Image 1 (cartoon, rainbow, N blue to C red):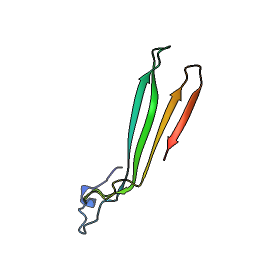
Image 2 (tube, rainbow, N blue to C red; image 1 turned 60 degrees about the vertical axis):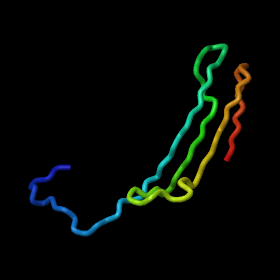
Image 3 (tube, one colour; image 1 turned 180 degrees about the vertical axis):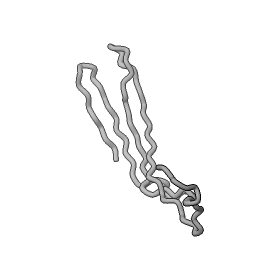
Length: 85
C-alpha cells in the first residue's frame, strides 16, 4: 500500500471491537520405529475455538470442537487409524 500524502492518514474516532479469532491447538506425540529408527507420529490431538475473543476473558468452554487420532503400527507396513471425537 502506498500513500501519496500523509495528511490522508487519520485515527478512527469511534471505538471498534477487534474481530474474534479462530484458534487451534495441535499436539503431536511421536514414537520411534524400532526397525528403521525413524520418528513416526503416533497420536494427534486438536482443540478448536471458532470464536475466541481478543479483548475479553476466554469463553467457557474455551473450545467448541476437539478430536484425537491414534496411529497403531504393526511394523509390517500397515497402519490402523483410530479416531476419537
